[in-house]
Image 1 (cartoon, rainbow, N blue to C red):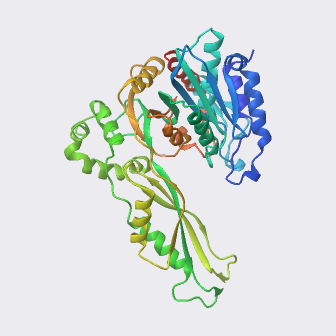
Image 2: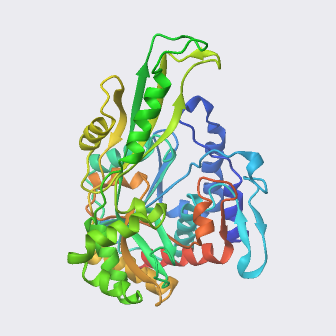
Image 3: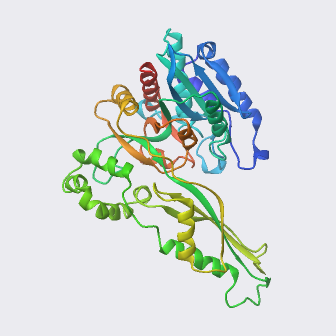
Length: 442
């Protein structure tokens, strides 16, 4: 029988890459993934009911002694594309690099998000094989297009709604076990997302009549667009401490050195100062205290000697709790202050509701962290910076959380959606223990 690590590596080798343009997707890789999961986890598939939803998402039900108040664990099958030449190893080779505690599996999806998905499978397989039956039903929801449209997750939510199922606890990918994220705080913290920012894209368009680049007008479309982008950059959204961030800082305050400890214990008075300091303390800290906006895709003329008849930019905006798509759009319009620049909302969703960081659901997560990852790890609320499939599940549960039970260094976090994504073997194996503990208490 193969080991957990070898099963993990086999599933990492399947290139389940998602693309916004679905004609580019190799659906055979997803079918192979489904087949491999069934083959590698026979006890799980003997005990759990399995459904394929929206073509390639997987929804499992593990019947417990009581069908009420189920636990729902989420992960996603798909991974983002790779640029092969940027990697130091085959991105789908799942090679183990290093030895001992430094041994790490290098592969696209090692953390995002097959690390969690396979750890969940391992925990369930072991418990089923050991004869365990959960006290309440358990659902596993594995989406197939989280990195693009999220249609699989939405379809699974519709299935649950149609059946009147409201999970008592939903857990998806999210914050990890980290250290040093908060300036001056070195204690390891389990960052459990209780909410996530909204996400939207604005399309900015400047137009002109076009012509030959040898006779440009005084203010061409490209210059007008550049000015608009510059105005957005020079007038960022204001900083503020939203409730999940306030709670995070209050939780870690006892572990902070002076004078930071006093600042964090008196946020009612020092909050504006703390937010202003965090905004200057790096990209992650800036993103938890303000709505962010950045130009990403740019397009102009089709040739280097042609004037652009239209110059376009995509403006990606991540909305802080309390902000809205409508409000952010109007603010960008005021900041650009140019009626000639067209502003179109391409897509957008408001920030998620905030789940409570007190009560039974929260205690279950915190206890699983303590038992599986160590008493020294402090569990704290956290505002998730990126969007995930979990936002769709707020329609069926008031207790939706986002946590990846792996201790990740800054370099490992930076490799997400980049080259050389990797996870240390020992760290991944400890993550299985977290899911096993959470399931055992269900």
